[in-house]
Length: 182
Image (cartoon, rainbow, N blue to C red):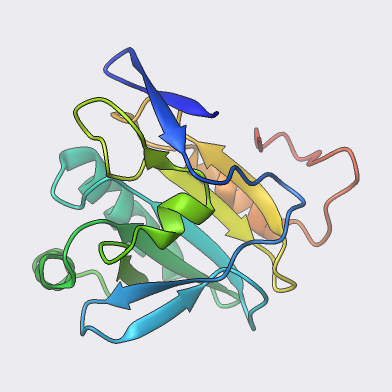
């Protein structure tokens, strides 16, 4: 079972652990307008799936703002930020923060994303929320980058995810660009 830390304390994660090279499970999230959006699997564009505990925390808000800025320059990728927040709260956050270059999706209904990607927090004070993680999924639907942040209260390796986005194929022994893909 995978784990992460919350303020230095170990936190167990549950769900199906997926790794670089695996097929990315297709799951349904709820958009801020209550429509359903599919993430994972094969797609016309590479997907950067950014998973955060809640947009209502300083670190998650900053991470979303950072990816929104970076997404403005991406023509061949879609950035999806997912959390357990209600779609209404996500919509309010996007309006207040001027988030226009990425999609937000809520995993509140059945925790399908957190479970399918192995990032559902299984114990501790944030039990039932998602750990901070990033998965980059190729157009063919394969995971080409995975980061489960070692400490939930810290921002992810942005450059690692962006480096993975530049990769056109993944060698059998993993990334060679120095991005820290795990």
